[in-house]
Amino acid sequence: MKYETFFIDKNYEFIYYYLKDQGFSETYISSLRTKRGLILKNNEVANTRTPLNAGDMLSIAMNIRPKSTFKTNSHPLEIVYEDEYLLVVNKPAGLTTSPSRSHYDENLAGAVLNYMQEKDPDFVVRIVNRLDKDTAGLVAIAKDSFTYSKLKDIKKTYYALCVGEIEKSMTLDYPIETISNNGINQVRRIVSPLGKPAKTYITPIKHFKDYTLLEITLENGRTHQIRVHLSYIEHPLLGDELYGQPSDKINHTALVCKKITFKHPRNNETIEISIDYPDDFKKLLD
Image (cartoon, rainbow, N blue to C red):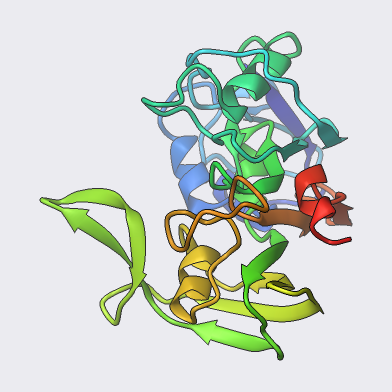
């Protein structure tokens, strides 16, 4: 079991209140109640209602869930940032983020698990921001439960090539509904008043003969949100076969999560990470 140790500088009625002060979520605190030994005070078993005094040493379990046991794979990882608490990789288009029935042998999560097992045999893959299979770009992975619980407010900046010309910045505020068949979610989403709120901010960067380069940020982050919204305004992403048409210019959706910004969950430092365009995307910008 991996623990993180905190040295207490003032009195607390209960450990619970200290954990709240440190930013632990209610969900995480609840998980600490599921098993003895996840909270230690001065190396003795404690619980969330144990008092704390200045000078005490508090140890909190960081990896509560059982280790990930899905199949690993040797797909190469492009690591763009790593420290003790988190990992950020550049996912290529064509690679799924998580294992699925159709992509069990080759996926990003399996490659991350393969990489991390040598460092931590009990590693749990905690992907903070998932990307569609055909979307390239930055994916953050938390190395422990606490980091994962705090690393939620990541600002993601996407760049995309859409069909046609968009002349001005727009806010696309259209609810998105998942199409279901007999209660089973289908791949495709639609704009519908019955859907969940979704807001997309788009800014045109450069115009080409048949397409426009866009900078995009999201307020909600629904599945397929960018693809659904741009298709709805009749400017589908270049190469998006699900919501648009195949393209002879690129063989996948022309979308990349190019920049992420977040507060580091341990020291509150602002971290900004950016990458270059993928090669096939970059060729279309010449």
